[in-house]
Image (cartoon, rainbow, N blue to C red; front, top):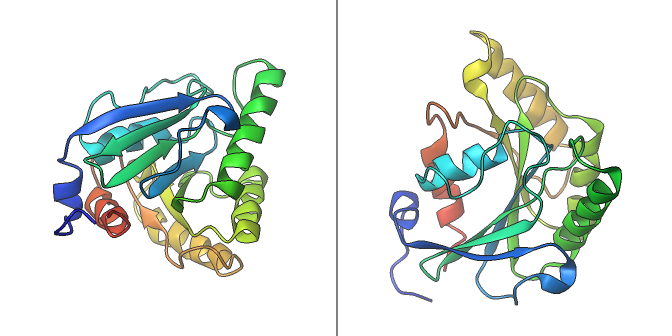
Length: 206
């Protein structure tokens, strides 16, 4: 332990360093601190969320081209917590062979990483759950890895839509034993929901 637990605001003000980028299971860094991974379909807003969460403009590379994140990237906060930015799954504008390799790496990491404490599965609030998301849910259920659904891009919803999207997601999560029961709704652009997400992750830090 590192002494006094930090609040979410305090934790994500701590020094952060890029630890490693892994393109294979063999190149993953040795297990150490608790890890929280961010997973989601390509172009769901994962890198934007990581940057907004950590209040850094370029911690994770942001691109409008799906498939830009091509490694499992590890970031470490003050010897307390690791954030893991996974390649997007599903559609990506790259060669099919590369996509297949990423999918295998993502699944191998999610099913077998000992320090993995939680997976934040990002779902675009405008489009809801797709079949490829359900495959990731099933993998996490099978591996008994707790996961938190994070609804992204809520600033792009029409007035009154958010409550319905959350209710629909709650119904889906009830069928997934490894899921936390309530999704978090966020906007990386406006900052909505970021404090709640920071607090949830700070609870997992040492």
